[in-house]
Length: 193
Length: 193
DNA sequence: AATTGTAACTAACAATCATTAGTTTTGAAC
DNA sequence: GTTCAAAACTAATGATTGTTAGTTACAATT
Image (cartoon, rainbow over all chains, first blue to last red):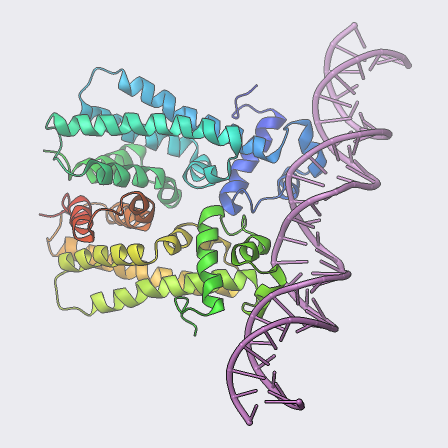
């Protein structure tokens, strides 16, 4: 029931908000806008959600956990760091394909989180990013990829993956296998020894 | 007088808005917020600007022209396409350093442009991006860099450059010469023949 | 001292904001 | 057909939104 992908009314609201928040931003989307989209009155929304901010918290918490869970699996896998990087690229691609609009919230709208919701989100994000960094660093130290400034390499890779949804929108006719190969070549091809 | 970098009151407003729009977004920033920051009343702002939307148009038009002007010079330079790509990276870096907050508007807030302002902005952006694409394509066709999917390579390079301001904020203690070298190695190193 | 233009002010505007309280409708289970 | 809960509704809240009109304060120029 807490799964934003179920077919309950609450889920419909969350799904609608993902799309609207992506299109107009959190601050640029009113409860009126959301209600209009669902064909109900704004007040009726509160039978299903407790506040506008609550919607954002719910969506971003769901999104952040997709990545944290994926990272958990990759971390514990018995492959070298280069292969882990490849699996991270595949993880981002899969989530982007399955939750394209949600990626826009992860890229931009998280800034409108407040208080405890913001703190919780940043905790998850920092955890994920640190794990990512460690894997990238490990790949360098083990001579799997060229040594270079780790922070700038990490930034570039993650930024490309984070914003990949905006590219995917316009090129979703390509096969996922091809896209995955392109991404790996692009992000790791230049780094590999 | 139309230069947002002069010291007039109008310029102060534009500069303040760049910072506030970056922090809270266009929709998330009220005229009250802007006035507070300047120590005046909201109504007084209208002695200098004609509307909130006008501010956004002004800022993004200024920003877009920085890139279009830079591209003009690079296009007409008598160097090969790989060197042009290097100069484009340097251009992005220079603008990022000189107008860090403005880059946030170029990355995100342009979506809140309306009507004619939006159309004008997209015209400039498309012009710039097409020129960029042509140079990248030329570099591939002339065998200066490895052949690969042009759209995904273009996307990745431009996305990294577009969001570089968020990285630069936290690492501005590094010398520009070093950063430029890192970026070139990262974005082109893997592509070069 | 009078004039002028600039830029601040107060006060008000209608519109919209997120949200609450209280009420009615709906639809399924009995 | 009655019961009951879920979910819609109406109506209203106080706050805030961007913006306009009209007025006053200021500083420089005549």
